[in-house]
Image 1 (cartoon, protein in one colour):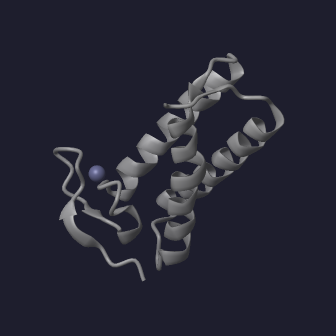
Image 2 (cartoon, helix red, strand yellow):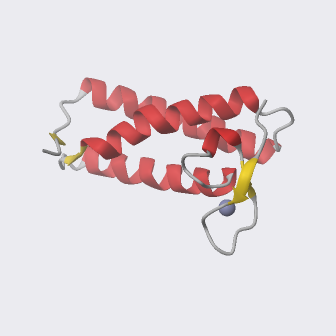
Length: 112
Ligand SMILES: [Zn+2]
């Protein structure tokens, strides 16, 4: 079950509750999806331009975001169809990014 955690989304003036799967992000589902799409797009652009990127960004997308979306998918009892579509779209994008990174030698700036 995905019981809402106490507290509201960090994005003011958003008053939506935070699903349990997003408790570490402190964002409601809509804002999490906005953020994840934005970060995925930016990361894809950086990959295509051959720019080095921070390994933490990529790790967030490929590990955290993926796990969260999968969690949401499983936990969502009666998801709003629009949110469900966005989650599936994000999963697909993340899978593509994963492929891209695996097949191209992406330069990562490891943080010391
Ligand atoms: Zn929100």
